[in-house]
Image 1 (cartoon, helix red, strand yellow):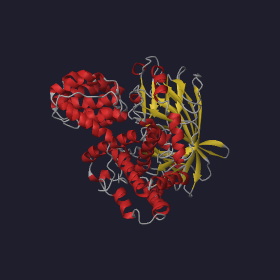
Image 2: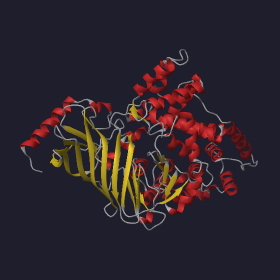
Image 3: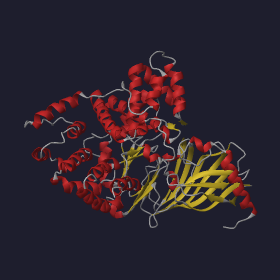
Length: 613
């Protein structure tokens, strides 16, 4: 790059900017300075290159100036920036840019000179094959075996690995996109996806509602489409599309139930993309197109609370969003609460309470593993990677906090408050401090002497759980435990009416000194080693590792090789890593499985398996 007088002026301006702005302090995980210049609209034009495992094209932003700064600060990670241009005097003109040092969590700061009059900026770039927010699958790694597949996972700060962007949830932007793919593939985004099966390799998208950057999503593969209703459809590989449409047939009823409680669904359509098994999460709430793991397609609709969770994000998270990742509980605690209310509305109190109790058990187990400061809802992450905040704390502790408020104020009053909250903050990103001020004004002050702000601060800012936190208990689980005790003494199990939740409670609460004979007896009677329900299989395989139940070892290998959902594989690797022989075996299996794992799954499990030396 040539160094000119203009370039040295640009460097000087950047240095001044570093000392004159404090906007970055608002979100410790972004270089964006939204109080100087923000980017309310994105035009994205990308070619999906499977041969190079690369996205290539440009990101074009409309500029909204809030100061006299001539610099735009963006986030990037492993991106190659080819050139930058600004729109001024009715034409595109080249401009200067610079990349900062690589930060292990935050990537690189990208600073673009936008001058004083430009209204738009365009950045030409391409991604790295190791982009943390993308996964590229070969045809052999898909079910159809004929075409490749790729998908994004942008939350929390992985958008910057495939788009140069102000990658903070405090920003909200609309976007349009043009994607090109090899012929025969279907591209989709978190936008207005067409239900046409036209596969000409060029696709156009529009997202007119303003969303935070982590909700920009992309995928492409050999996808089929199956409608569930006039507003809900499933996109998936052909082998699973019909099963998924049947499995998630209650989705339209879920939408109606949530609207009745918390106001209108504001995103037009709600479609589901069933991803390959390597998808690292249960689901991702990308607006208009939730990304879903195939591991919840169980054949009995027993795991559809995950759909309720992703749908609930259409109100809590997508509509009202955490302003930074230390406020994640504002997304996930509210969503876990709304999810459970949806399940109660559709399937009754007993099922809802079972799911509460399972979540509570998971939280208690998680609290034992976490450092006290990591059990605070409004967690102070510093510049640790925000992936670290994704524990049971923001989800279940956040849910219990809202359950506590419901108990104290009554459901009718609390529902009215929540509905107004979703209306008042619609399409906004808010901090914990903003929520507390709103809670004080709209609930505590209107109903004095019910809950103090000291109690609110205990929930939000103190570690662990308050002594008076709800402790969900299920009568159905009590009956399971009675049966378990009889069975351990040689009696029979009556499981014909058991749900997945009851099976999970049974397996997870079996005594760790259970005999090998009883393990074999249980397996013979219920075929647990070969069961296809991924959640029950996970619980059984984890117990099998602990009990050294060798008949399950082949299934454990095949499970780890074919499932990439981190919730299901990392506890198994963690358990295997506790003994030298199992650790050696686990490393061998992991190396075989690694090419099919998402980068996020690889990171988590390599920490478990290779930090032992």
